[in-house]
Image 1 (cartoon, rainbow, N blue to C red):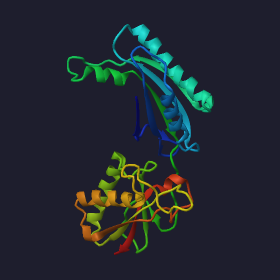
Image 2: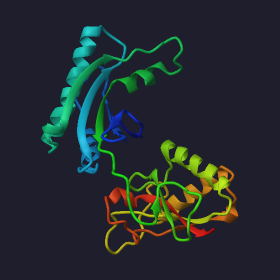
Image 3: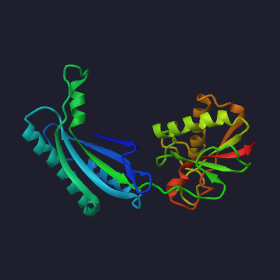
Image 4: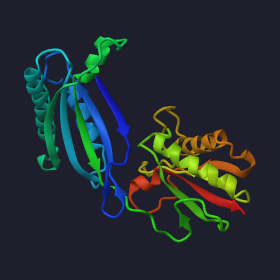
Length: 272
């Protein structure tokens, strides 16, 4: 059983005020086992190789067990599970130099008197977490581009919001993106003269395809869906509809920087 999830949070200051980003992939094990099947190996290798290699700073591997059994045995089993994952990654072309931690954490304790579904809870604790630590993207510095709404804009100004970047193929807003949009909503209400177009963008599509497929809807409308997601959230935050429009631009407006910058939504001032 596999589960992939994205965790974005501030761990510590890195460089000059930079924050580190983590993505985590979990591999789940059968009771008292430390081996993985072919599909699990394929999925975890795809997870690592599908990550922008220029941003990978390090990989950490942490093994866990459920709370059944003796502590010493569970520590050894969790360590063995972590070692299995390390071996499989190396066998499939992941360089050992970037794997900085292979650690068994032992059992994950739970309060069995308050857990509704104890067997399922325990099954989620029989796992290894593959943690990829990513280098922070440098801030964009471009004429006419800003990272937040200002009081004195001119028509044509672009606002590229640092935390409104999407996963590959996704138009879902992360919790980090929603926090950023909460700030946008407040500033939009403060600067009531501003009107803007919400522009959605994609990266990395084939040359003959301007637009990309949204993995959730299976429709080739990813950039439009990204713009619409931001529009709907701002409406939810009480920004007047008549001050906003939205449009998807596909891959037609690349910034010429790191491809991740093109998985973006930006605001373009249309009236002041």
